[in-house]
Amino acid sequence: MEIMEEKQLHWADYYAEKIIREKGDKEVYVCASGITPSGTVHIGNFREIISVELVVRALRQKGKKVRFIYSWDDYDVFRRVPSNIKNRQIMETYLRKPITSVPDPEGREESYARVYEKELEELLPLLGIEPEYIYQANMYKSSTYAGGIKKALEKRETIRKILNEHRTSPLPHDWWPLSVFCTSCQRDTTKMLNWDGEWEITYSCNSCGNRQNLDIRKTSSVKLPWRVDWPMRWDFEDVDFEPAGKDHHSEGGSFDTAKKIVTAVYEHSPPVTFQYDFLSIKGRGGKISSSTGDVVSLKDVLAIYQPQVIRYLFAGTRPNTEFAISFDLDVLKIYEDYDRCERIYFGLEKIGEKREAKEKRIYELSQIGEPPGRIPYQVPFRHLCNLVQIHVGDVEAVVEGFKGIVDDEKDYIRARARCAWNWINLYAPDEFKFLLKGEDDKPIETDDTGRKVLSLFKNEVIEKLDSCDDQSLSKVLFDTARKSGLKTGDFFKYIYQALIGKDRGPRLANFLLAAGKEKIEKALKHY
Image (cartoon, rainbow, N blue to C red; front, side):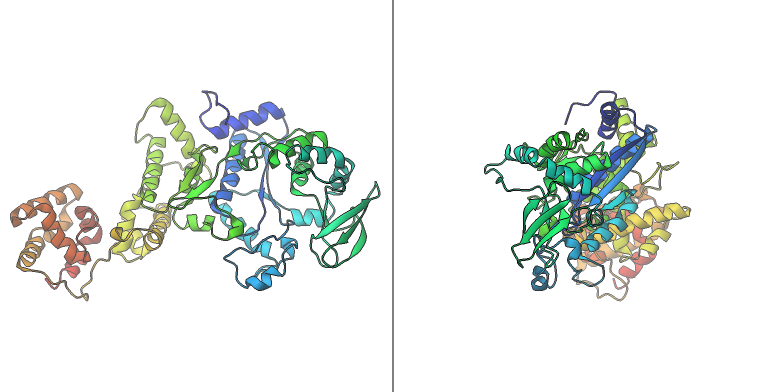
């Protein structure tokens, strides 16, 4: 990534300025993103989407009109059946057909492609992302790109020369920059035989033997190959900005050749861009890929992280930096970092002036819309993890435990509590989990020392729960431990065993106050 000017607070602002500077003062700027819905749209794909949205937001905050387009490349070929798909043998019969011609294996949507399109389209608004969707199958089937296709045919040799610059084996002289889906079997196992110099092409199918003439102004069966399709669309949509992954940005990669083709063939300047790095999942190496089916989706991440926190992860990381999405104990720290950023934004925590300005900008870009007028009611994620376990997943009971808060604060806590409960059940290590015993649970077997400890605890601590805060209760606990004659750790061990059946647990004073006198008395009823 290029070195940013000191005055720029955030990389999104830097690229917004760069777009304006390089593309001039335009009435509308076009920012683009897109993907082939060949399988689950994973969190790595989301990095491009939100990277574009952050730049779009920065442009709009500068008073510019922006068209944010997202292309579903759903006229691409169905090349491989992901490992997580049902009815694999049946699905394999659709290989080499357009993915819009492949049925939904569950029978719910109109096509295989639509399953993944719809899922993402329903999730993105939750994160404040609402692009204009373009469905490439519709564009090609309606012959909208006929003019762009003809131009590619006219400049066939120019395109072949550009592509050959980066190939170990050159494209043959009978190569054409056009793919044809056979009108008989729908597969792309075809060979283009001739072009009449105007609008008619001739092809033959290697799968079914069909041979046919097609008018590219009227047919729904032709498509430009990816390396030509991309620059053609840059010209067609007048794209000003589009980032790409480092695989596309490598020397001789698709972005490299697309820049040359859009200039030489379509006489259009390439968009402003940057390279974004890959994402990984904490504890699992390698690049994630939709086509394998073994992925973490945006839906999976939303189950654990609130939308603002997801945005914070990406807004707070430069696109060319590789980072991991964590589902382990790092989740606790990520929530703590977000809450700290929020406190800095509202002036409740002070840091250096330069860092403060940067944190405030990250917080602004992390919000679904405009930042709230006052700081949300902050409940640490770690504390919520304890509360939802105390209430065995009853989120409403957790929310009602917070007195004197308004409805929007309840909604915020409710959303975070759901994420906490999901994390506990799906990813939290066993040592972090607990179940508070109830009055009907069988008591643990304990020795004379344990019985004395529990009796002392009931007499000295439980009676004071309603009148203590965290600090004063901690003092009571340590004073009681001294009275028992045991080391503090040994004293606490008996308490934890009686309450949750473990030697250790959440910080005891916080835990007791969160559970409340009634629940603690029921847990210790039989002692």
